Image 1 (cartoon, one colour):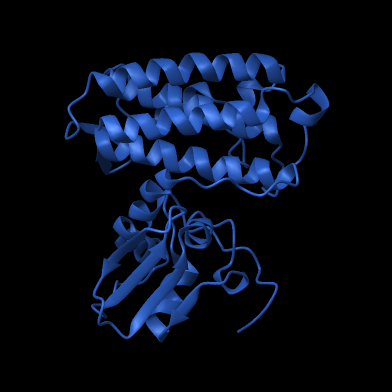
Image 2 (tube, rainbow, N blue to C red; image 1 turned 45 degrees about the horizontal axis):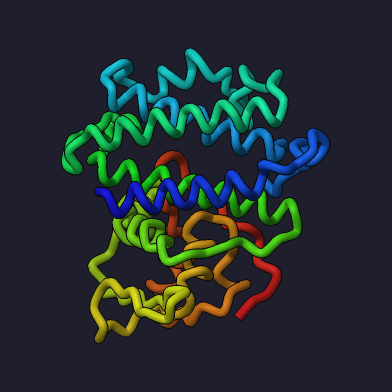
Length: 259
């Protein structure tokens, strides 16, 4: 738990540095996400850090009801109740909420169950991993908007783990049953270390950089546009529908090339 929280705090600091010197005009820079700008992304992260803290503290029982009541969520999933804040005010608010959330995580046993997505309670440890994954996913949108290459550290393993752990849900939200076909996922971390899951002897296999796979798993890149090696029909299907986060099935970005 301490290791994941350390990773979460480090990623928060990295994203904080990314946006801390933005002008008010830059805060309104559009993202690749429809109708979102940079400020929307940080508002979203801040609100769900706030929600995570409330749920862990027992001050709320249902994430959807909390979001509906307090965020002003619109059809684009933007928390419109906070649009009046300046970029600097949003950043200050996020700093406060993520600090409160971290304190709540430190008070939890890693196996404590938190009522996160409807019908999908998470352990405190898994929720910390999910908050780290979502923060990195939205930071990728910001990097893209600013014309910068997304930064990937060794802590990307939390996102990789969720890509594998959430595989049954990815099939389910796409109206599919997860097959029993053996699959092997082998990824190279920034350090050069190998992170792997599944059956090494499987014919269906995905191999490549942790960065490429993580970008695919958060639905920010189409696997066809990466250097991933994807062999086998089932591996190609998994690469097409992998999704690390709960909710409806999001489409992958349109591929710029075929192979």
